[in-house]
Length: 246
Image (cartoon, rainbow, N blue to C red; front, side, top):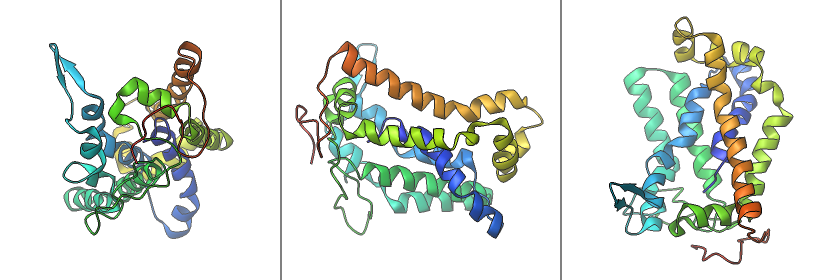
């Protein structure tokens, strides 16, 4: 799993599609890409780490099985899930920029998660085998804090840093001009809501996922290595000190 990538990669993806959109008259919603990039974990992440309500902990009995396998909600990290969500949205709303954006966002999330040691059922339901490149340890079953310590001590934090760096290299995607000329015209929802919401508020919301991902990345690095002095291990599949799921 990734901690900041899913927040910041939509900016790079949207920027990449700009040329295609202009040549083919093809529109993709940035908002839909972002929601799609969050979607698989919206269904699963809270139940992996557990939540406490009135003293009762609600948590999956087998977090790994629930998150990435079948039976479980592992199908949310598959290519087919992205297609089905996009198709359903198209049938209900007839909104092509959103339908395509949701597919792209979900696919981006699933492909990113192939990099941990647990992997994802990318080709569900044709196979239940998980595709995994094993670059860093999957430790979601250990709880939020150990998982964060492991992720931000491994190549995982490098992966997040790569996407943050890509946004900063394409810093114009965060400008007001880019939002007004490249993002709003491609999104029927933003075009519809714009007369009712001040531009400055929309711009703050647009930039929000990036700054959320950036500050989250910095804060967890500080927590893992300044507050708790965890050891870095940038070897493939690290860190060595956490029981990784394979």
